[in-house]
Length: 139
Ligand SMILES: [Fe+2]
Ligand SMILES: [Fe+2]
Image (cartoon, rainbow, N blue to C red):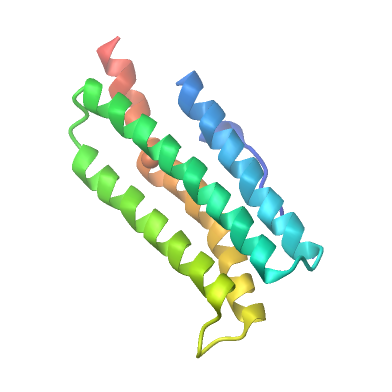
C-alpha cells in the first residue's frame, strides 16, 4: 500500500511562486511513488528522481534569491539544508541507477520512497515556514 503525499494548509506560505513550486514538487514525489507502486524498472525510477532533483534545484535557487533580496538572516543555514537535501537525493538516484553493494534494489527504492515522503514536506514545515512571518514583518 503506497501512501501518497497530500497537500495541507499548513504547507501554505502565502508566497504564491513558492507555494506553487512546493505543490509541483509534491506532485513529482507522488509520481515517483506511483511508478514504484507500478513496479517500474530502475532506470526509469532514476530518471524520474533526476527530473525531480532538477526541478528542486530550480526551486531552491529561486527561493534563495528571494530570501537574499529581502535580507533573510537565516539564509546560510537554509542554503546548506538545501544542499544536503540535493546531495541525499542524488546519492539515492545513483544507488538506484548503478546499484549498491550492501543493499538490494528493493531496499534502496523503499528507502527513497520514505525519503521522498518526508524530505520536501519536512523541509517546508521546519525550514521554509519560518520565513513566512519574516516576510510578513517586512510588509
Ligand atoms: Fe527551502
Ligand atoms: Fe521551498
